[in-house]
Image: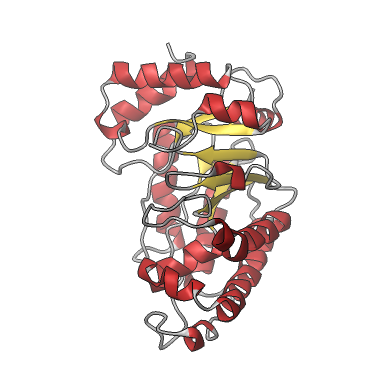
Amino acid sequence: MNKKERFLAALRGAPVDRAPVVAWCNLATDAVDGGENARRQLAWHRAGDWDICKAMNDYRLAPPAGLETIEGPADMLRFARRALEEPPFARQLACLRAMRAEIGPEVPLVETLLEPFFSILFAVGFSRAALIRAHPREAEAMLGALTDTLVDYVAQLRTVPVDGVFYATNGCILPPAARGIGEEDYRRFHRPYDLRLLDAMSGIARIVHAHGNPLEIGRVLDYPCEAISWSDRLPGNPSIAELRRRTAKCLWGGVDETRLHERSLPELRAEVADALSQAGGHANFILSPGCNVNSGTSLRTLAALREAARQGGG
């Protein structure tokens, strides 16, 4: 099988020669343009010889001009639908088009997209979450405007074209974690926008990434998507075996991203073998760290991860 065939078969639960394997890392900042971003990400992809070219999206949304953060509800109403010519969107699209041209059609290209609430907090500061939720009318107008923008962005992703979108949401994190979200807030400020964007992605492989811990991952199990990704090794999160019992969707994970850069190679191989055992084998499973890995992770370790996956964890 080529890499794209393996990826699509894994998502469908069809027979595969082995589970696809991938890892990813934050490599770019606002200091680089789309071309340099693509060069860095392609170097990572080629060094790992990953089955999936998962593009990181490290460009961050900025608040409206003249606004540093959100001080009150009136500030939320200044957030309007954004033009895709603005740097965070235009640079990432340029990056993706350059990556697509280099890897060709037989390697799956997967974009990373952050949910609207998550994106806004990166722009104004995570300390503003409670203030935003205290003013639901204005918050919903702000989140709706950004969702409109991201729907426009998804339409452009089809022209690249990408094969999938790795959609990261904080909506499953439970209190009392610092970023924990109660059920009512999840249903008001996260779920409607998640569902609208996932609907806009229909026809593209949708990987829902339940970010963080501890998780109530049941919040996303009914989402329209082809795969569920999460940090299965973190405290308070369900294991692969548990989630395999709860959903027929493709599962994506298996490796502790917080420890990958410091593991011995035998420990890493044992973790890969355990992940494949919990998954019930190679079918309907994509092996990866639970989230982005430490930038200091050695190529030796990454190669060991890749080879352990290819050899079935042995």
